[in-house]
Length: 296
Image (cartoon, rainbow, N blue to C red; front, side, top):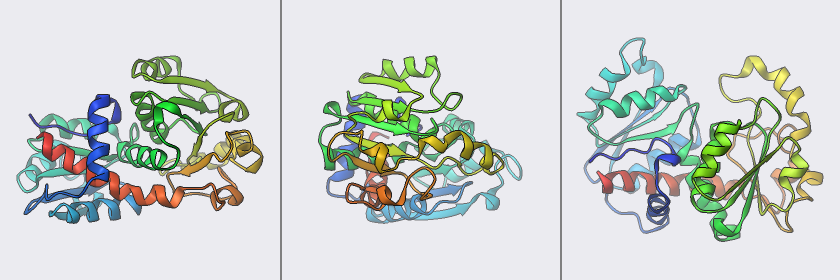
């Protein structure tokens, strides 16, 4: 049976741990002599470099393709692109605006599909986050992880991973940019503990790790002024970090905007592990690709 990596919630806790173990283990030649299609409807620095190098380290050949070269649902349908590329490659990986594109690829693909990012999910980032946190603070099940800011695709995947591993996720998000009751219930059903507050001070209290993300994601530029007003009190600065647990680590998926969602003092400070977190995107990509090949 072909296994895909669409989002973290599609995994069991045991499968998530399998991917993490493959990530930090010795790279295997899981893709020897095989191609991997890397479809980038949305451009990226970390995702492109980490995925290309992960494919190479696993013995495969990455083929980077920009969105305009394909024209998903403009020049060709998602389904036609998927069926053709599945005849060339062992894995199809896509970074898209609409999550439905990933779901449509999965529906017709004979080879594994890996979600490199969609508007609903960012599983590769969550894997890198877990690897980094376990390296610096220990087991997730014994940790409280705070996320401050917009409950977006990054926050959702992080929350899913923390819950699957039995940890506590504490969300500090403004009203209308938070997780609704159904979403909180869904996260709770995965295991772990979930809490949410509109107060960033309340959300961060006692946290072992503090995460944030940009307030304005790609495609939201027309909302910039409004978002900056709404999120202005959600900047993770030294004062806010002082409410977390002693020696709490700071994390950010990047790109970061110093002076907006995080102060330079925190982002570049001694408790920041953002660079290690970014480097673990390669670690996570290697494990994800090895896992879908092993399971398929």
